[in-house]
Image 1: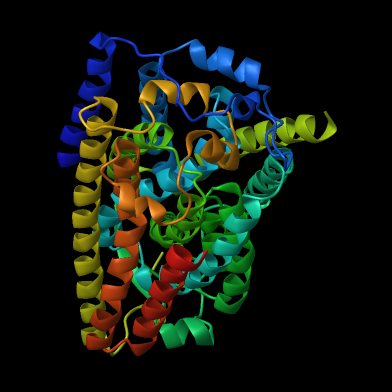
Image 2 (image 1 turned 135 degrees about the vertical axis):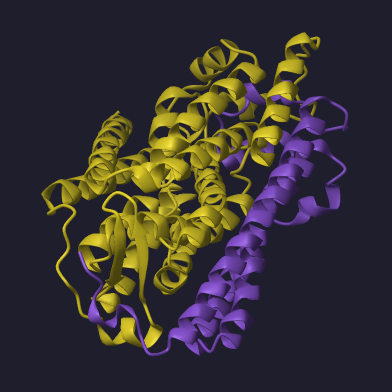
Length: 339
Length: 143
């Protein structure tokens, strides 16, 4: 309710700009050479400045802000139900549809992933489906690694980052398609999971009874989270894209526990990487704030729908979205590298 | 599907305490989201409405957002690192401050969770929460 009111206030503020007199001021201290789009590190080759300026002029600033808000609301619903986090959908799709530099899209993507996960976390934790005991050890490794990934992502050429992003996402989607679905065998805890007390049970309304769970291969999962953290930080994705496959396929957690715990892990992994982007000046309020507001609304809706959705449906939605987003990034990155 | 044999342990009391920590943590996250989102919307409204003076008018940003972060910073005299904290009367940096509340609050909450886990007789979880807070603090001030 409070989120809705705040979002309404945001929309009203954007709408009020409609009646405000347009100002075409440019910063007095902005050297003309900086608007040329050239970059000493070859990190700005995705779109020439003239094209970018022309596209940006197609809409006033508030038009872009409203578009972003509507778009991210939709992404928020899908992200929570799919358990992929907002970042993995936001970064490749927004970079395709909006004229922002990839740095700012990744910075916004991380903030969107962080805020979307925070928004959904209270409901998921209270429901008993999200497990801090499962998520916290993995998040510790992942967030430490994501600091390195984020630092690397801000110095690599944009096209290379986009190409690697596409390869990573398509790889994950392929893994999910190839993996067996839904039904889990009974597991025995490994020593690490036993020592940390990683187990639980929750009421699954789709099957009508309580489901007990534990995990195995915790050591391997901790190793996997080094890679997940680096990739998540580098591409501005957070960790949502990899959480569900790792928790289900590697550790054997039920998909609903994995989806819910994924949100908790994202709050920590995205925080670590977000600091790097914030401190590096790669977070732009005009892009990030409407995106966060939309994602907040979307994730609230998605979290309400989650307990009523069957695992098979969740899996199908995640896979389709990942394939589409991954292929787009792959093609865009290839064009950038070859061109 | 039935529960695995070890899903319910003899330490049911500890499990209950852990559940209390989770619910407390969930409630704190809810507060964090409400406060941070309120601050974010207020700062954004102040910025885009022009009520708060800004060194960079919002109308100028679409001409510049195709630049890389480093070029954008150079073009707009944007402060990198934590120096912006001295300029929060500037609308653009007030928005920045409100954005920082989300990761800063996350760091604070995981630090608070550490003693809660210790009180719930989960020392390993307490240690992991403390280490996580340290990692986030490192990201905030040292990277």
